[in-house]
Amino acid sequence: MLQLIAVLRLALPITLIPDNARYQKWDLNPDLDHSLGIELSYLPAYPPNLNLIERLRKFVMPGAT
Image: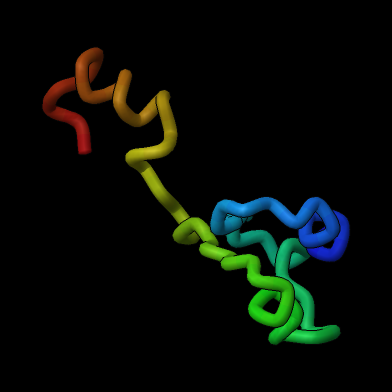
């Protein structure tokens, strides 16, 4: 997938943000993304600020943690 994105030769910097799942990481060539000019920025393991139900729960149950 990274090679297909690099073939587009976009003039902008490319940053992909995959989740932190095990299948999103690979050991085939850890420097492949840098050699293609693509930055990988993984999401944290549990980002509650990105989970919409967590924000809704603050309003519905204000005293809950």
